[in-house]
Length: 437
Image (cartoon, rainbow, N blue to C red):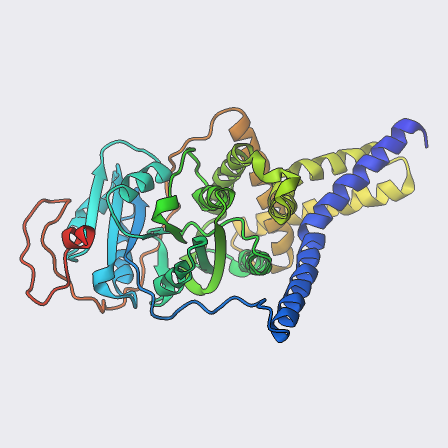
């Protein structure tokens, strides 16, 4: 094997090892580190030298404003409003601020029919993008804690309380909850749910090492004094926590703060969402290069191992495939090339079966892996060519099976219609009172 062939072989193995490390090696490393960290904490505790953080107080109820940016969400908007006000949180400490980002369907009319006292709606005539809308909403409230959510996300009753309790620690800047993926009609949830559980496990291990990097954009709580987004990003659940970490505050992942979100019902909808998020991931990477500074210790290690290598995986896979193709004259590399080809062909077969409505469980993992990396690659091309936009259309929504609201519905003024409403004398304080206290 001449020097050129040797360089190709080394390139192939480096690419393959980096991908394997990202998906398998890194989880094992942080698992071992979390075990060692817990053992150290236990020993310090036994010898009366601290080592364990106190449980967050159960009776901590700061003022909370739930923020939501909405475009075309007529299928779920009313159920979402009711779900939010069913939270097991003191009613006089909770407000819901919705920003209508130039909807073209009946979303605005449907919100105008909602009659909750602490609901405030702002209608933007021109598309602004999610982060810009959230920033405008944050400026309208004096609440200590902001909870960011999405229209298609159902919050469990205790979700907000479980998020907020951690802010009793002044060092905590953001808290992410657990987003549980639910199957929707027409979706194949097996691979998506497995991958989501895998990512949740990584978040849990990173949290034990105090290295939580990202949140879930549909269930993310932020200390209002730290909510100062300076970059227009379409992956706010990564951008916001990273900025808070760089400011010296902790970011926490709480798996007990549960929210539910349906998987996109079609392959095309899932793929389009991944391409959009992929472009935003690269945007976030280049906006947060200081996170890779080795002096930042575990933060830099986790950011590189979990996020950066994941974003580079499509390129690494392409280089590995090309290198093995050029080395196919050697028997071992011919076998490796055939193995890669068989894996990618199985993904194509799974796609064809699903397009025809036939079961493809055997090929669901290769299909999910390949579609995710292809979407990431297209996202990179979109970012590099400047085709990525800060606004996008929502994936198709399925109407919720609505549960009866536990909250008392009343109000004073509709910011959508401007029609005065009579409030009951027993109603909790209005949003105006909420801000003035």
